[in-house]
Length: 122
Image (cartoon, rainbow, N blue to C red):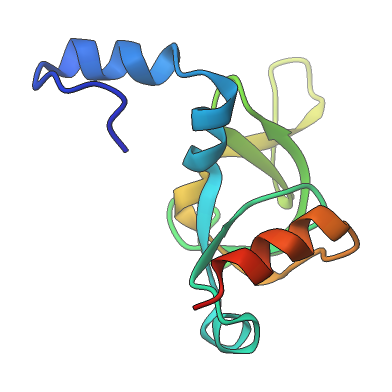
């Protein structure tokens, strides 16, 4: 999603890093599983803590787990099953871009999120 009209990669990257929160939120969109999309009537939703996702790309492809943390600054999410050991020997979550996951179960405990789903329905 472009936040600038420039064709220069450096300016596109800069605008991405400096994006305001209300536009940055749109970068967290992830597609829903086909069954869930049919049930809710929506193709994609922003990933939130508590959602269950399936990782589609990278070293953790095929891992299914709950979203533990969402980092809005780095535009990354942290999933329960995707961990690695750091140099100190501690187990840490591996950052994953939201576009590389598919939402399998949605946490609809929040009324505001239900309103978003209703609004996006066609």
